[in-house]
Amino acid sequence: MSATRILATALRVLRQLRHDPRTIALLLLVPVLLLVLLYYVFDSDRGSFDRIGSSLLGIFPLVTMFLVTSIATLRERTSGTLERLLAMPLGKADLILGYALAFGVFAVLQAGLATGVALWFLDLDIAGSPWLLLLVALLNALLGTALGLFVSAFAASEFQAVQFMPAILFPQILLCGLFAPRSAMQPVLEYVSNVLPMSYSVDGMTEVLKHSDLTVDYVRDVLIVAAVALGVLGLGAATLRRRTA
Image (cartoon, rainbow, N blue to C red; front, side, top):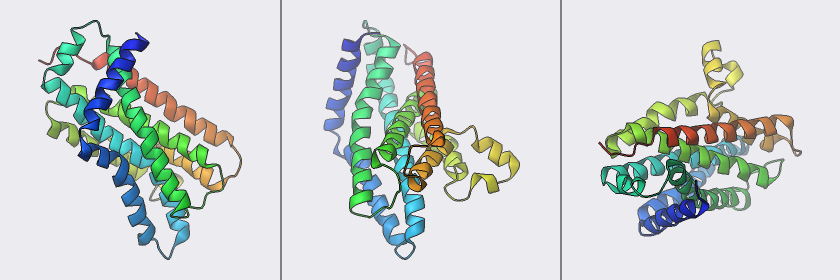
């Protein structure tokens, strides 16, 4: 593993994304527009907007990074670019971490923009520090990138990559506690939600929403999301094939 190769990979991906305005719009503008829409949906119920809006600040980066990363990686595999890159003195870890670094740059921009708009323009009311909210959003973006890299190894086309989204992300959205408290779910569903990383993302956001100080539960939630993201990145490197066929 080489820092130089990781940086070179990240710069190559960033140059490609710079020439793709639709992807940039998806990453940066769509989460903000959805938050604005949510603000007006709950125009007369500020409490619901604060609760759901803070959670979505963590969910949006995960979903968008998963979608963009899985499609971008698959595109490089099907075009033969990935095979040519891995034929060079470039390790799998170098490639995976380079992608993670490149999309991490967009994750910082996305999370910062969405959090800033929510707090200073939409008056999202939280008790804790905005930096704690931003940290969870960034870790979710890293998790989305890791999941996208991982599932791209099992898809044969961009359409198949998109099909993984309802299979992997939608159950987490339904069971993460966004719509109903996890403790109020059927016991089996509650047990399932306890092993899903998005549940801890929402819990972390809720801690920032309700508590002005750093809590033990928040630290636990952050560590779990970070550990899962790093673990999935490792799986992505392990399942990355050197040949496209």
